[in-house]
Image (cartoon, rainbow, N blue to C red; front, side, top):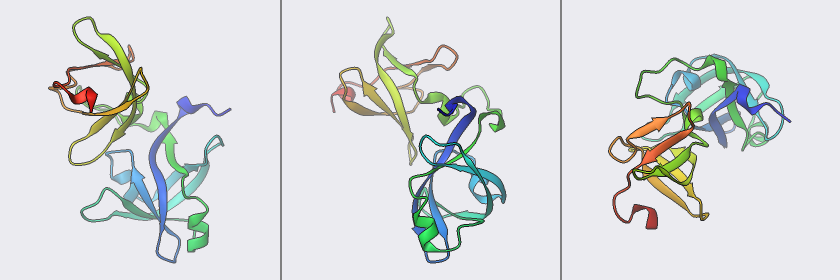
Length: 176
């Protein structure tokens, strides 16, 4: 079994781009240099050890949250198709230091979602969806998944070390 605590997913390989081996990455990081600055990275197939790769170049598709990257050893569409679904990962200890109200995606996943003055457990954070406004995907204890805007007014308290966050959703948000 892989020690998942040592690796952090920064993106997912979602599709080939063109015929020369370029690949599309759906980012799970707000640090564009992870996808644009050449250098050492790792890719990981589910439940396997990461494989070191060299990022040759990368750029953001204008108007979209998708990067196109080129990596050594992937030189045609067929080899790009073989790694669709793999994750782009980095060692956890290479995370940049953030300011007080900033959070790493990796730290939010798995947090308990609590609600109200008694901080009652209502579910768990399963994903952070990037877009115009970030959305927390929360799987409620009854199994339904809901999307909660990740804004201070709705998510006023986050306790990373204690592994929970508090949500104050507007009426009806959790019933959608």
